Length: 289
Image 1 (cartoon, rainbow, N blue to C red):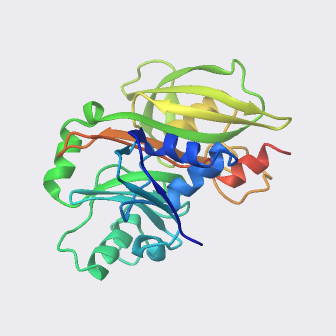
Image 2 (image 1 turned 120 degrees about the horizontal axis):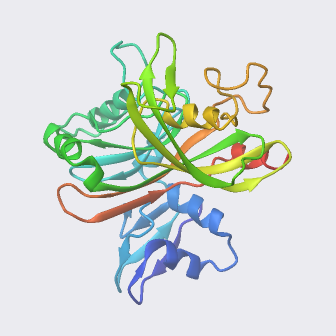
């Protein structure tokens, strides 16, 4: 990819700056570039509210080591001295007790070894194996403990996108239930049965004849929460082998669930960090059917 550079002449946030420099490009295209190909003063970032000041140089293209490192498991979208944000691919475990399993945690440790960093990846939060999307890992146990001690205080926006079967009515609402771990799957109850309260807010972004594209935000982070709650609405996630339709014949061979936005206050520097990926292209293609 040919390298293009833009000189910053006035204060702006990175995404707004890129949109202004490329007026003929769609917002989705600019977000794709920001997710993979943008550097500020030679340092890769996908932080869409990165604060630009006059004199900085924004570059597009010319992949650095993190881009070359991308593999079938993770993309590294942000890194500093304390933490790393990755985009985990579907089918990849966050972590595992079995050393031969390919995991996001293991791939990060390979990256640290290759780049001669004297640190170890510590998992801050998890995504299901078949859910793709943004995750944050720390480079020290102390930083991961700061997240653990004040998760709700630090993480102020975390959103998912899913493709669900059918047209969801009403197109916006909240699902509340109590979840307990069953022998094979998570069980849901509309009343308190001693399980853990789970609250999911949803909003339909687009509908077509067969599917709904829906954004979801969680007040709680229970295992399989979104998948269970969309089943409760009788509109399960497309290609969900556990909570979906047994005769699911969707054209995509993956669970249609992706963590597309992650915003948090840095536990060390105190700065607000915002990350967002485009909706997976396979999700958008489903909406054209």
